[in-house]
Length: 335
Image 1 (tube, one colour):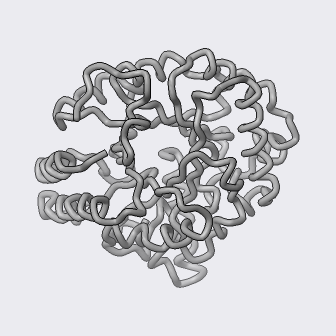
Image 2 (cartoon, one colour):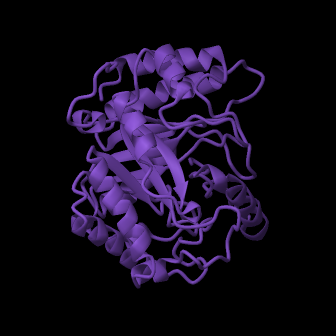
């Protein structure tokens, strides 16, 4: 989630000072961490066994996405964006329809917090959600999603095994039972509303020293429709991190996920920094190797590229060389 990057940066620095170990640290997994013109009844990601997704600034499915898709020669199978509960808006039907009409499946990262308040907030706590305090809000979304009717993925309270969100286990009093209870409450409300077009994606961060074991947040196989891991190559831009291949970013997370489920794992958020001073050559090589790993490792079930210029320039087109590498890799990537 884009609004948590600064929190993760501070967490990494603090960890480096207090533990002396950050080589495989948090942050988005630090130390790692055919173009459609007419959408069919089934969603793009349902058609794709290993969806290519993107998350980027601007209106979901808007002009920025259209420009990127045109340049790449391919529309993403999935388009992801972030919605905080503090907005208290209903289901984003207009945004979802815009994405759908491009031929992609909407993926909504649904965040139970006020991002401007940071940690220490309890208004949208997992405990309160599990207890039914937010049933009215859940029902409004569930009914809106059911009325929308087309396939949509909800990625609820992601990276719950870290320390940078109030819903994470061990943060602000959140327990394993609270998290799982909130997840199950959400699913039940959507089921009762007849929102059978909605699937739910469970998405921890890649593990790091001190992260919460994923099993503590696992709702159970019958309560999860797809799984993902978030992980990035910070490449030394955060204290204690080093240049890390896509394969190595995710390896430990894939092993841990395999103890919970046999579902294919989507790289829910991923990207790489640049090495600096090389016109993007190292990042281009990282991207090329990423596509090779995705092709060769059957544990992966797709990926979503984090296409933002934030604390680092994660964008596909940060250099012409990185864009060319991505476009070339995508040409042979089979969804």
